Image (tube, rainbow, N blue to C red):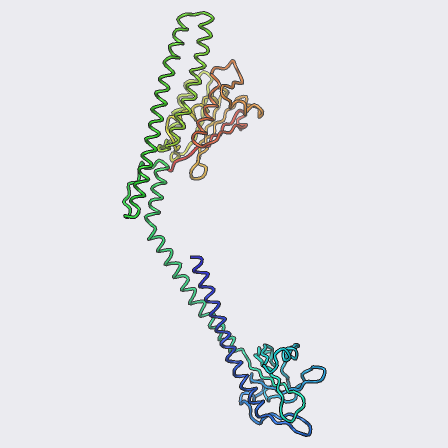
Length: 444
């Protein structure tokens, strides 16, 4: 479309220039005929070598300042053009000549010189000068003719305006036709794009719309790709579940045996078995989240999750009198599974309740069209800036006397990364720690 509009502009400019040149050539032709008559019918006094113009050259040159002028001039030895005889229309004025007129005569002997100048009333003139030798005169004579080009310029402006309007309408019609053709002709592709986006955002499971024959193979291939991805995710989930069962059962047996046979060796075995179980839980949880994130076909209400977690944690920490203030829009949805959002928000909120004194504030809001930000703050002692990076490491615990395995924030980080999100720790306005988790959001 851009090239078409550029071509229209170029054509319009070329047409305007051609029209202007044609109009100027018509004026030049009239000036050439006027000079030709002057040269043909002018006479020379053999005694004084003075040139006499013919009695009638052009009726339009008989009225003062009529816009049609002619002049006969001599060349002085120093190269100046001195007027001798002029038309009545010039009255007491003289035609102006370009300063390089003599040089142009020498460069093109025998040819006329055309130029633009100003007239006695400062009107724009098209002028023509020609150097000729007349019988009976020993030095050349310069014949000049000029015509007011106001009407020519007016005609050119009118043509340019008409051409611009016509090409503007043509360009507007061309743009409208292209837009209509693209919108109508490519509408199935736009529909296909929207439906694929709906599948990606979890609002649909497959492409269900009917498409033209040309797009049916593409739609079928996309459906096959979606089905294949879902099958791969399901197999990953099954393998993860089998692995969890295969590992947890032996670890549980080891813990049971160790508890039934107390002693130093049993304590070591029990301690290491619990560590193994925590690590297995951590890596299996991460693997399940990664598998689910690849599919990203579910959408979970954030408000429902936060409400459920807030009520549960307030009961768990009722001895501390923790009050959880949460806020999330009803139309805010997490692009992922409910269990993962429970674990992400649950880890952050549980950590805040554990270290907070009385208040925990939770906010969830949309950031752009495809992201959401979960913020959890507490009024606890907070965390020094230099310690925030270390606390995210697996198993890191700042207070060994506090219960837990030290995997809470690291699990949160792994889950956020599995969904292409980020985790940031900062100082909270309440005085404690501020946890910010950036996650994918689904359309309402």
